[in-house]
Image (cartoon, rainbow, N blue to C red; front, side, top):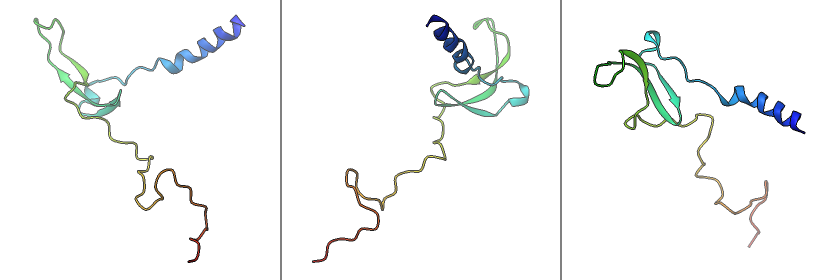
Length: 96
């Protein structure tokens, strides 16, 4: 029992721990969707006040826009039946 649980945990670790793409001078200006935010790779100035050196980093601040919707997901069609009503395929309305 414990061996199978340990095996499942070991196999799940690589899938759970994925690092974000590296932000480098070659990727400056590119965007990537991370945690629902459209992050941009940009150069950030360091300084004595922040205690950081000059570097390239992902800008995922609150002012960045959300990621665009997935193009494979189709919006609801306006000509479909209302929600909760089942329409049998090929059925016609009853004659009057």
